[in-house]
Amino acid sequence: MPARLERLPLDKGFAPVVDHRARLLILGSMPGQASLQAAEYYAHPRNAFWTIMAQLFGWETDLSYPERLEKLKGHGIALWDVIKQCQRPGSLDQHIVEDSIVPNDFDRLFRLAPQVQAVFCNGQRAYSLYTKWVRPTLDPPFAKLPVTRLPSTSPAHASLNLADKLQYWQTAIQPFMKPTSHDPL
Image (cartoon, rainbow, N blue to C red; front, top):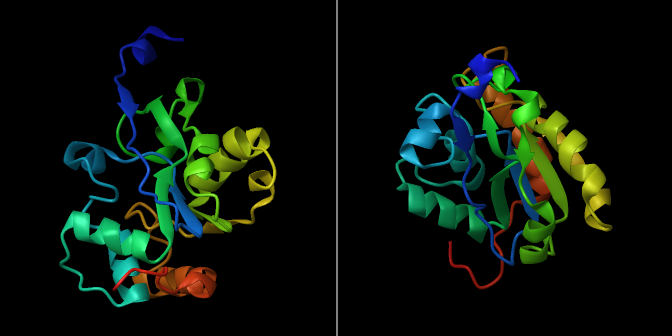
C-alpha cells in the first residue's frame, strides 16, 4: 500500500438499525463524513434519504433522529451499510480504497432479522459492494434474497431530482409499506 494511503484514517461505520420484525434491509455503502461526525445515518443536510422515508410513510420531516429510527423499525425496515470500515479521503464512494474494505457481518444481521425478504441498495456503489463482498458469502436462504439497486439519495447523485428518486423508491418499497404488528405508528 502506498505511504500516502497508509496515513489515511480508517473510517468505521455504525451498528445496524434492526430488530426481529425487519422485512426489508436498506443498505448504504459507508457513512459519509457528515454522518460520521454526527454519528447518524444520512446526516448530510442535502441527502434525500430521510425526506424520502418521511414522504413514503407519512412522517413529519422534523422528527428527531431516534424517532426516525423507531419509525423505520416500526415499518419493518432495517438499515445498515455494506462496509464496516475502510479508508476513504472525503465522502465520495468512488474514493473508497478498495484494499482497505472490511465488510459488515451480514450472517449476524440475518440471524437478528430472519424475516428479511429483500435487500435494497441505496445507490450503485452499495449494490456493487454487496454483490461482490457479501452476497457470495451468505448461506441460503439469504444468499437468494432479491437485491434491488435504487438511485442514491446522496447529493452527489444529482442526475435525478427528488421527485424522480422518490418515485423509484416508492415503486420498489411499496409491497413492504405496512407497519409491523404490535407497533402503533
